[in-house]
Image (cartoon, rainbow, N blue to C red):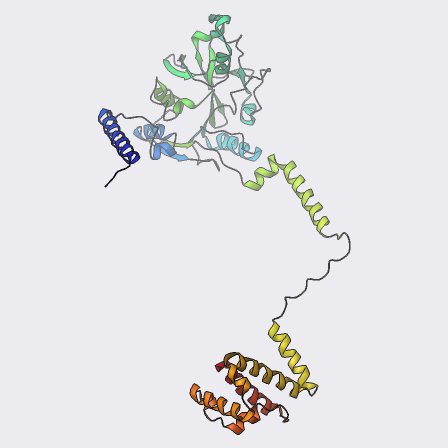
Length: 416
């Protein structure tokens, strides 16, 4: 048996490939390494889970909600760590009324702290801060204390981009009682009072190393208190374990046994129709106009009416049957029966050519013998006289006789 040289080369290449694969697997070294991919379970869904557990260790009762709907009960502490830009004027007024009349403690941060290249120093309007006569000042690069220490030649485009990212910087802050803590705040954002006088119930947290920049202000409001911080990012699961963030939160909320604390960490998503009305009204108007134009366009006809579509063509059998019924009504039944007999003779001469040379009596005998050989019940009783009458087109046949003879002739023709 001869083996082709190409088959040998293919086998050799296959063996070399398998050897290379085995060698590669033998050189692979498996190393197990644990990579932190973020929090899992409840911590992944709730960014304030850790601070809530801390409050529970102090004996407080905590409630963590993904979206704000209404103020809590009297005397509670509400930590609003989510964005407040979606709150309506009625909801803002309800929050202020809750603090003023029930003695609640509201802890918030400004709505927006990142200007991303804005030239003015103004921060977008915040209804709650306006009610407290507190303003937020965003320092430019030249006004920031750290900007004077950094040489201007090293501030390239990449650092300019990082300048507008709200990145917390670890700073030493001073509490009203003189205690110093290490916490993360953005040195570019500061809070300012706009009160005629600061009473004893108001206090602030400042940075002595940055010209006493204020990062937190607390103000008595009716029976309650409102505390404003430049940011609340230090209380999330990632930051609460760093520096003195936990101690700062304990001081801000005055944690104690039996205290009721509510955390809001998410933003209420408005209904789709409400979002469309507020932000996509131009698109809705354009879509409505297009719909009106389309309805008007399809209601108009241009040009003459198109001809009606013809019905489906009928079967040829229906046409033949209709023609036969017409001829029968016109007293042409004898002609119809003559056509059937002629068709029988053509089939008989084709299958039995020698019948065409026989006289009529012998032809009738051959047809009777053939009919008896078929052993078909309808043909078993045929005689020579019956075959002669069957093939005689001169006799008049009524409707019943015409149908019976036509059926018998058709059976006989099909058996030829």
